[in-house]
Image (tube, rainbow, N blue to C red; front, top):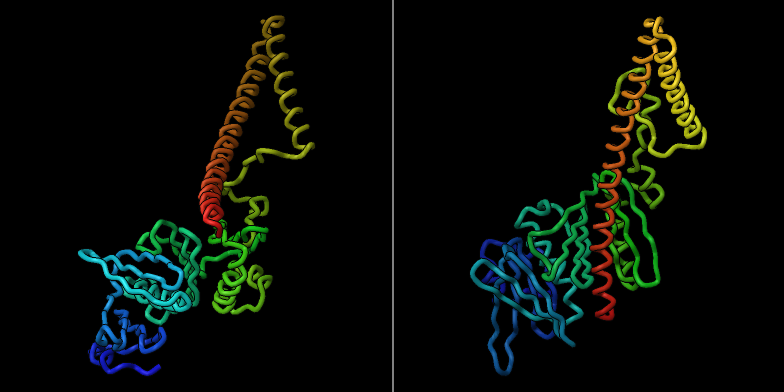
Length: 325
């Protein structure tokens, strides 16, 4: 694309990193810190260049039948420009790359490889991370970042309406719903970025390389670890029978102690021997129960977090369905 002279004059010491031809003589050029929108001379207007710095606080996008409008909000003003719909995707990628680099959201040598918008959800795929923004604006500083170095698994759950992207980060699954018609491109872009980062060639190889093995406390040897001595909350039949047997033994010991107390007052040694044993057993049962309750509480909290994330995803999907996406 030929750079107009008026744009070159506006550059100063900067260099153009990318450009998009809008048709006729119009163009959008990107420098490290600004987006320059050039409008060629027309019947009713002179040629001009408008600059849009990349340090904006919020970005919104509105789509019409033929034009897409970008509105950039700064601390004390807002600026906007319109482009043909078929150029909007490329311009959004370069615009977000610029603002992320200025705000240190990505490194200087990090590139954006794909941007996807689903109603109130915006996904940005880079060389090293996945960024997710959820809200009524297309982008602002309130976004989540999932670093590829922390990824421990990737899976896709396909449905008739949407596909769930299940990205595990530090063994915690993050579920992201993408509409069925856009899901293949999201999958392709995300997989290519992750495969390149981890130097693999397939999804199976990726999961084999980044997956983590569950820790087995039973093989820890004779050391005293945090998990030693903790009984499972739900065991198999043999363990259940063993627990019931222990309870019956404790009850029998308690009954025998009471019988000896009432019929053999002359045997204090036997009485003093049985009672501490029963008390010790009850103390051990209480400690085991407390540990089980703590484990159950932690499990419930983890499940609650998953449910909340799923509810948020469902709400987003419902909005998309209502809008006919």
